[in-house]
Length: 441
Image (cartoon, rainbow, N blue to C red):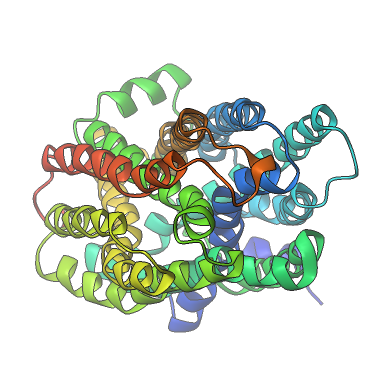
């Protein structure tokens, strides 16, 4: 009888993945996005509004989190490309990181009773563990995508289940989380979400994460200096990664602003944020299929430009609503653009990796996803800075409860609509400069 280790070692993908493998691999999108979006959307709100930690302190802690996460990405990516094991380049990292990742995520929302200074120390320590495990697991899952799916056609179709799972994770993480913490409290929410993440990650790991037999010449280690030189001199990667940073920042700012928007601008119950966020992400599900068809008939660049434009125009609508229903209708339009961004960003990055392999003779998925992660993690820092500046300038004070100064409403609407539009416009310009105009190389 073969051991579990031997079964994992002997699995290799030699042809197009089967439908069951594609779906199982796609299932990884659910827990990773659930954790990521719950953290992005509610951690500032949780520590500032519920635990009464000063907003400036939380901003500094978030900056430290963003810096650590950013630094880890290129290191883990380069190591993943260089290390050789009988089980492959990516699989061992993922298998070892799943349990620490899920446990650390739960502990973020379960701090002991401590003064504000103690809570910040708890945050920094627990989030450091979460950051390491998240990068190890998610970067290596992402690095498998261009390897498993090899053409724009395969990637457009194969990315559909993954992004649908991802959106469902976002719905539970950002729209379902308010309902969960309202009913069960924050620790109860943490336990439920962490348990769901563990089950989905284990299924995806055993059912869909299979590496190809990469030719030794194309998978051999590249010198660290050459890694950086080839990556940052890539004329396609530089505009892509800057555009991706702007897009991720726009989305992060929106998610961070929604809880404040619902409570202090729309004067609705916290749980009603589920309706607004649900409208965005539920609409994004069918739009993924739409954008998959668009990219197969045009090119990754063209489809990405269209999706960024739709997203940017729609976000401006958040300036007007006076109730949650009106905001949810705006969210429907925003969701169409979000679906395109989710579907297309990794398809474009996979195209860049293919082009690099033609030039260098090396498959460097880990390096590119790592450097991309390094740059786009700046969105966490930018989000924290935007939130701290806007809330502090408006006179927001968590101890006042709902009796906030009049300026708070306008400032929150500015944070939710105008600031993201600015970042979206910069993203569109970057993607317009992206030089690969064809569908496949």
